[in-house]
Amino acid sequence: MTTGELQQQLFNAVKGKIDKSVSAADEIATLLNISADSAYRRIRGEITVPLDELYLLCKHYQVSMDRLMNVQQGGIIFQGQYIDKNFKFSQYLASVMNDLAYMNSFKEKEFFYMCKDLPIFHHYHLRDIAAFKWFFWMKTYFEFTEFEDKQFNFDLHTSEDFAIEQKILDLYNQIPSVEMWNLETMNIFFRQIEFYRDGEVFTSDRDILRLYEAIEKLWDHLEEQAALGYKFKYGDPKQTPMGAFRMYFNEVLMGDNNSLVVLDGHKMSYVSHTTINFMRTMDKAFNDNMYNHVHNQMKRSTLISEVSEKERSRFFRIIRDKIEHRKEALRL
Image 1 (cartoon, rainbow, N blue to C red):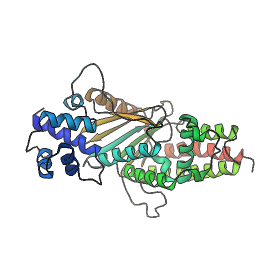
Image 2: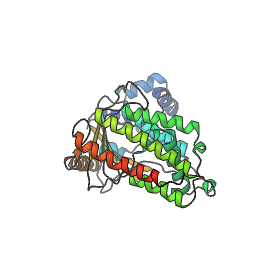
Image 3: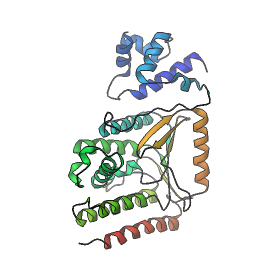
Image 4: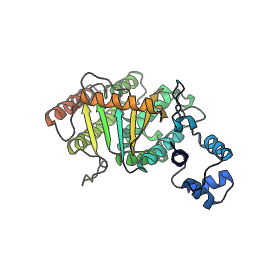
C-alpha cells in the first residue's frame, strides 16, 4: 500500500465519523489549526500528513492505523460504544444513523443481515413496534432505574426519537440488502410480549392487541417487499422502489444478528453484543471469513424474494397464523 493510498483510507475513515451536515474540511482544519484550503489539500493527497497531525486525527476520531495498514498481531480491532448511563439511547440512534449515512456515501454497497430476531430497522416502519421494543430494552435488558416501576405505554417513546428512527429506516431502505430469516426470527418478539403480559406490564390486553395488529401490518409490508424484490416506504401506495431486497429462508439454521457491508469492494463487519449494542471492524481476515460464512448460509437457504412464491407464502403464513393464534388468546 502506498502512502497516498493509506492517507486516502485515513480520510475516508475520518469522514465517516463526521456528521454529514458539517463540512469535513472545516472540521479537520479546526482540529489541526490549519486553513480549510490546507485541509482540502491533505484530503486530496496533495500534501502528506505529518506524524503530529496523524496522531491528532487518529486520537480525535478513534481511527486505528493498525486497522488501516492491516497489521496482523493475532488480535482483531473493534470499535463501538454501548448503551449505559453515559451513552444514551438517542446517542445510540445517532451512531446508527451516521454509520448508515457513511454506507450510503459509497457508489457500490450491499448489506447482509443474519436475522436472529426482527432486524432493528424493521421496528421503525410503525411507531407502535418502535415504542414497544425501545421500552423492553430500557426496562428489561438494560434495567434503567427510571423504568423499574413503569407499565408499558405507547406514548412514552418520544416523537424526537421516532423521527431519528424514521431517518435510520430511510437510510437502510436505500441500501441493497440481503436478509436471512428462519422460523425463530419472530418468536423472540412474541415471547417478549407474552413475558410482559404474564408480568402485568401491559395495562390491558387491548394494548397487546394493538401491538399484534401493528405486527400484522409490518408482516404484510415485508411480504410485499419480498414479492417485489425491493424496499419501499411503509404506506406508500405507489410502492416506489428504493434499495434491492433479497430475503432468504432457512428452516434449521439460526442467525446471530451480525451483519456485513461491502462498500466499493471493501468489507466491514458489525458484531452484535449485549442485546442491541454492536462493534464494527474492518479487519481484512475477519471480514473475509464473515463474507464466506454469509455466502455459505445463502447457499443453504431458499431465496423467497421475487422467486419461490410457494415457499414465500408458506413462510409468511406460518408467522401470520402464530399472530392470529395469540390474538385469539387475548381476553377482550
